[in-house]
View 1 (cartoon, one colour):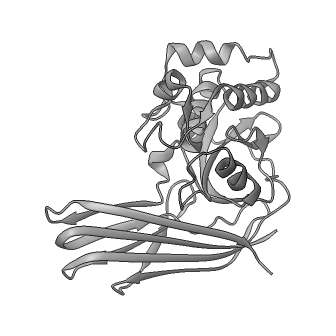
View 2 (tube, one colour):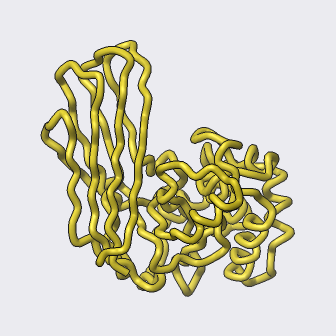
Length: 278
């Protein structure tokens, strides 16, 4: 599927600040059949945008805004071709990656209740069916509720609340799969699904302007490699998904991260549009 994405981020400040440094992970990955034919990132005030690739293979764009300002607008535009399914070539998982994707993290820590929850889905000697069972259990056991959590919510709180958004579903599944010895990683990206947005609106669920932003996970299966699963919708990755970044949890792949000089409070606004190319 050919998709066009426009991701606009507005940083507003109550008073002037200066010397702001910003990193953004917004460029779609080139992986397993996904192709990014065009990507641009424009800042206002204008300035030089540089980039590097982090240890997980994500493209990170960064820029400085040195002059005094009360607002910065960043517009990222992408033109992407997505594969029918995520089918990467099989590769052995390097020891460092295996350690990273099995180790507990701040968002997906070791937790007794999560381990018990995961054990109920364990299919002996079949990690694939175990992962599918966990995905279904999280999908059916949690309620999608944008107002229940925030960006700092951790997996144990999600399980206790029984509700959250895609980031929370993903973190709970990360913690659960890792507790069973299945390496797993967090995936950030976009989801093109007008039908899901329409259904949520009809159900009275508040849908934010950045609803097209999405998070899911990959699990690593011996002799097969990475398999991409979405516990928010109980399905494998399809051509409606655009992969942007992967890491141990959300902390490795935030769309935006930065620092600035000044005492003014920052307010962040995000608008995401994903549409099928004509």
